[in-house]
Length: 203
Image: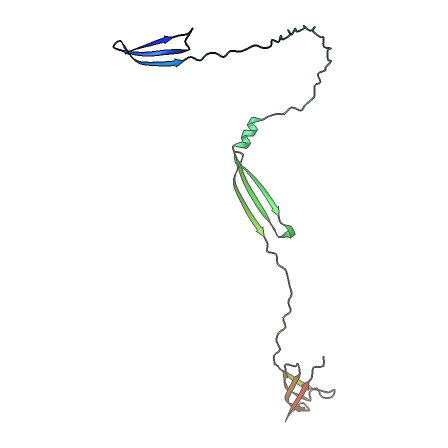
């Protein structure tokens, strides 16, 4: 199979492409040729030529300046001292005192490699106790008392002797029962006696 191209550039405005098989044209294809557009010049404008003038170099006045040395304290960098503080474990202890004397807290920090390794704290805190006195009155009960008694005068030391039992009631009044014997010239007489008495609370 052969292909032939026929171009007509002067008169024709297309191209004919033909395909041949066994010397016989089998397919023909016409491809049109695009013609360039015609530009019509209606006005001509001339651009003026620009000329650059060479400028003369200008002399810049000299600027006076002065170097001033500012004294600064030299800083010493001790690398060995820094490493000695960096690698080992440094222990920092701080005591915090609480207000009003309640107690204190001890904080212990362990620092190594520029970071906090551990922290421990011990608290010694006393509980705050407020004292308050409360008077509690005992409920009243009946009370009993017992004791000896005797009588005397200037001439005879002992006139009588005996014992008494007293009862104190809930209203604080006292009731008394006494028993005993008389004494005559220092010899006990077989004459016994007993008596009653009472006391009333005034104030």
